Image: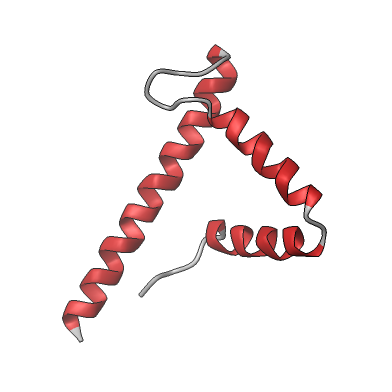
Length: 77
């Protein structure tokens, strides 16, 4: 059981780091403009995601709900 909670905490930590990098990429892209060498075109990808979700109706709303659930602050362990 201790191994499973350790793995959960590692996955939760990596997810938190990924979300922080995503936020950093969005802010950096908005400040600098265009695509950045390390982050790519994050803002363009987010805009494309929103357009795709909007074009898919109910399936897009369900996917948006799943994405919001993933980004919500929750405890893994």
